[in-house]
Each structure stands twice: as C-alpha cells, then as structure tokens.
Image 1 (spheres, rainbow over the protein chains, first blue to last red):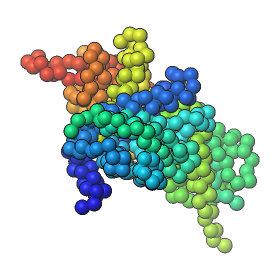
Image 2: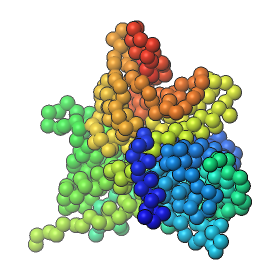
Image 3: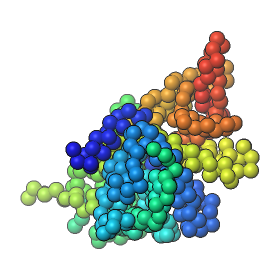
Image 4: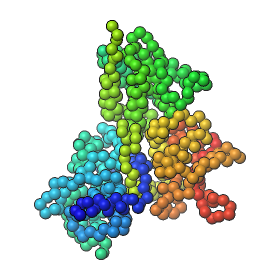
Length: 184
Length: 144
Length: 165
C-alpha cells in the first residue's frame, strides 16, 4: 500500500476511536480568543505573536497525543513528517487534509495549502485588521509539533484566504535537524 | 424594472442593521416606507393571541400594499425583522424563499467573530449575496 | 450560507477543543491578578460566544420564540447543548422555593483533560448560557456550582444555576 493511503487509513482508524466534537464550539471558541486578544493587545503584531505562541504550545502537546494514539514514530524526515502532519494531524484535529506542493530539490521546504477549515468558518476580517494573521495559530502548531520531532522549522503564511487569496498557504522551511525530544 | 426595491434588516429594538435598495429608486422614500411598515409589523406581532396566526410562523406576510409596491415582513425568534419592498406583482412564494435566505445570510454575518453585536452589518459578502438574491427574482409575466 | 444552513463540516477530535481551551485559560491566567479576575474573564469569553451562537442555534433548529424562561432553558439544555457539545445536558430542574432553575452536567467538555486547580473551567459554559439568555431578552444571573448528586454519594455534578431576577 502506498504511504499516503496507509496514513489515511491510520487517520481514519485513530479518529474513530477518539472522543469527538462538532466543529462549531471549536470555531467559536477560537473566534472568541482572537477577538479578545484584539481588544486586549495594543497592536496587531502582538496579537499575531500571541497566536503563534499559543499555537506553539498546542503543537508540542498535540504531537505527543498524535504519536501515542497512532503508534507512529517518525524519524526527522521532512517529507514523511509533513505527510503525517497533513494526512493524519490536520485530518484528526481540524477535519481537513491540506495539500503539499512546491517541494524544493532537497526536500527542505514545502508549501502547505488549504481552503476552508473549522478555524475560520464564518470569519470575515474587518478592514481595520488588515494585518491580522488569523491562521497564525496554525503556523505555531506546525512549528511546535515539528520541534518535538527533531526539526526546527520556520513557518510563514504566504497567502491568506481571509485576505482574498484562493487558498491559505503556509511555507514551511526546515532550518535545523536536532535531536528529537522523543526517543525511540 | 426590478422586482425587488429594497431589503431592510432591523434589530429587536428596531435598530437599523442593514438596508439596501436596488434599481432606479429614490432611497429616502424607501426608508420612509420601511419605517412605516415597521409600525405595521410591530402591531401585527402584538396581536399574538389571535387564533389564526401561529406563533411559530416567522413569515408575517403582507404588511402594506399600494398599487406600485408591496411590503412584506418576517420576524426571527430572536426578534430580528426583515422587510422586503417589492413590485406589486411579485409572488408571495418568491418573497418567502428570499426571506429565509436573507435570514441565513444574516446569521452568517452575525456568526463572524468580528461582527459587533447590535451594530449595522457592513459585511461585503452580505451585500453581494443580498443583491444576488434580489436580482434573481423575476417580475411575473402579466397576462395581456 | 451553506455553513449556516446545514452542518457540512465534519466533526473533529475533542482534544482540539481541549488544547485550544487550555491555551485560552493559560492566557487569561497570565494576565489576571486574582482568581476572581481570571474567572471573570473566562465567563466573559463565554458570554461573547453565547451572544452570537443563539442566532445560529435558533436558525438551525427552526425554533420558535420562547416566551417563558423555562421553555428557553429547555431549548438550551436540550437542543443547544446537543449542537454545541454533542449531547443534551444531564437535566434541567426547577427549584420551586426561589423559582430558580438548574442545568445539570456531570462532565462538561471544558473540564475534560483539564487540570485547573481552584477554578472551575465550566465557568466558560456559564458565560455561554448568560450570553444566550441576554440575547433572548432574559436578565437572570447565572452561577457555576459543583454539588453532590445526592446525599448518599460523593459523586458531584456541575450545576449552572439560573436565578430568578
């Protein structure tokens, strides 16, 4: 079986055993968090930074659970790990499977793309918040998760569906392979 | 001539939330028409104890009629009101369908975390979609 | 319009919500100078959500206007609870002595997988209830309690106490 189909099967089988929620409570809680931050903090850069930090914390804990529930135990191989992130991680935790595209020659950078998600249902950015990066949390999650797997990456949102793009694109760039925080 | 002249959405205390006109119309006149129709709507829902009106019917039917236009009303269970000013010959069935869709669009706009509750809706999507709904309604052919 | 008209979005793992909620708690904790303030902010976040979510819930359920507090609370503890949390609340009871109501819930999703010490994370849900009440025109105060299910047991349940005005 191809690696992709194998991961998809693992995703479905893991998901079927987990407690689930309808997406609305998640969507609306995230909306409440973002609007609270916008009110609390002085400028949009601070909001983006806070979302990134929250995402990073979530990513570290989430990958812990993901590996435990799926039994997966990947080496710091960027290609395989990003497949797990999109086909298993995103599937289970956000209900979508982003696409991966534009891998570079040595498989150290890739673009992850998705259209809609449980994070941004109903969201329309007001013009006063043009620089708000609503998906910054996702960047933080990817960064935090990959760090726990031994890869230090940089995540940048290169296109934002809430700002008129067709898809939301996140550029993931490997900076350093470290010793994994998990041991086999 | 357009079939739909205006769409208005109003909050529980009749605070204006959305107002859009279509075609070659005099906006001020339509605002006046909507205001007057709101009074009729409010009276209609006071009459809740009437046997012939089911309390769970959101569609309130015809509020006002002249030889040039009709005003239709709708109230949600959260007391938000939709009014449509339409050409005199437009069928009730078309209006009813439009009301339900406008209600859905309003809920969409409201569910945006950035939309401040009780304030007028400026969502680009709502404006665009309501216009699409309004222009989709066709004037019935008149028998000659 | 599709999202409002029908639920097209697939379900997600409950831990997504728990992770997000825990981060929200952390954030409020880092900025609160007292546990009262922390609780206040958590409840306020829930109210923000509750004010908005009522519109969606009544639209989806094609619910008619609820004239009495009791019928509205029944709608919340049944229909809204099912849509937000996947199942109805454990119960709705009236306390005749002071005409208040209790919505009962043994394990709110806010309390699963979360260790929050002194604070009851279900205060967030209390906020949601308050938001919905206000949106529907009811002014009743609501409190978060943890009470024993009955005298003979140490089992507890969360109680969202809706007091008469």
